[in-house]
Length: 387
Ligand code: PLP
Image (cartoon, protein in one colour):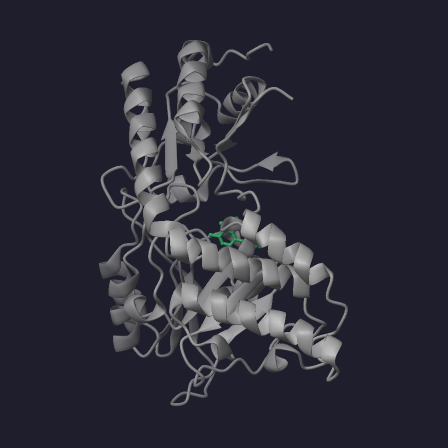
């Protein structure tokens, strides 16, 4: 295959070499981590080492990390009215969800629909803190869900401020850090997060592995989703995905070590991408540009462009990008994130997301800009592009 540029790291990141090595090594370990013999203990060691590595990425104690099948399951596990703290055992009465959360959070976990409320965002893509404070005041024991950074726009949310508001109102804060962790600092203590969701495949680990992390032992989930053998201290039954977990741990360690340097490099690449884009299409809109964003993400739209057509046209040019719209089961839905920011439906239809990662280089940016220079005027007229 001709050389391609993969600019869709927010959908998933390639496996890091360290994760691949850990995965292969773990496959050679035969034991079940619950077995007491030497083979079992070897498997247990891999899982517990990974727990330490994942905990370190978010500044938590290893004992507060629970492995799951991914970010979606961790979100589902976290969002339950039954969540208890040392001082509060009564069920949580409301789930307050920012309007830009990932669909796995917006689905509301195990809260009844009627107990779930949206918290609006400003046109810049950040949650409205005044609205959050008001909604928290209207509840007595809320669980608030606010992501660290948005998967479409990359906009970083004011999590520490939201935590202060939530705690002052007797609430708990859940932070979906699937896109933020490993790209920007994600220290649970500094953020004031009570519960954090992580996913391995966004940081260079394998798909199908994630974690729910709690700030302390006093936070308790009495209603696990999967009951059975009592693995993960009763929080998630089933024999552990040892190789996947070991690879997740290795990816977390590499991300933790390298993200500061990676962020600076990616931001420089992203800045040159955005200035090149604006030079070719001065009318293009880059969403969330006035506030802090993930260093790797650009979501842009140009009037008249249909994102699905653009994605195919870029693919034919050897570039993988995604439309801002969530696409599942082949059905393209308009982006709820951009709609919540008050963006016009015409622009939403044209939103294209570029997301970079640790192997992205100047050649990838040049390839994208060359393709955009070639395609933009035809795409803006809504024309389809032949190969
Ligand atoms: N949360 C966010 C913000 C995401 O971007 C994603 C994946 O795209 C998820 C949760 C779901 O994670 P997973 O794919 O591991 O289920």
